[in-house]
Length: 301
Image (cartoon, rainbow, N blue to C red):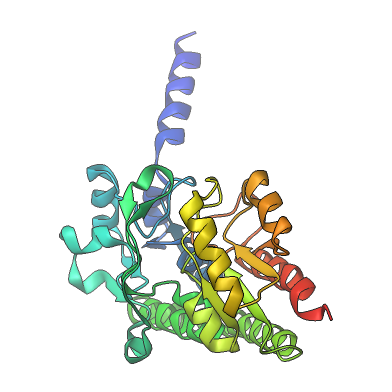
């Protein structure tokens, strides 16, 4: 009986060990990221040579999430902390993180950030009130920029684990090839009707719009909230000069909203920015689904 109890206790201790301690034991990298795209890129590049963590809850926007003191301590103990840049993850500026571990993955194209002015404060999910004013931060929706962010991640990994440099380079090349294929597929699709007017429910598609030359106007609507009368009136004014037949959403909108939009001649589709981890699949799969969804818009006569 005593041996059995000891065995159970040992199993409990082993199960309680974090992935960080297991990775450290085999000299693997411990990497923390501030959003899901960076986690996906980092894991693709590192392969078996790193454990990559993105601890934000699945029901919160990572751009406005505030980690706990314990989670911040986990970030501080990492070998690398991958930042998105473009003022993403507001909490980073309010805590002390080891500068030598920080990697601003979008620093190389900082001069191409898109400024966002005069957007209203609003809230969605547990993150509370916030505004999208300042700098557009969904940088990875321009797949050329995403490839540059992946390069920055690989460069950082090679600096501290040069022995794995060949593996990192090989994995980076495969990832960048996938991103390039996405870029070409989206560009070919939009080229069929480049001036087709399109609405976005939220101002998060700026880099996507610029890269592909989409004729896009954004409003400030939430998928889980039916807009108030003032917002419907605003939309009707927009449609007078921007006769869009489609609105893209970050996630599936409320059925009542869908029905009222349909009554105005506007259909709804999802184009998921993938800032947080998906329930199923991965970043590449989400973007391929986005491509499939948008083909309805640009293939129509």
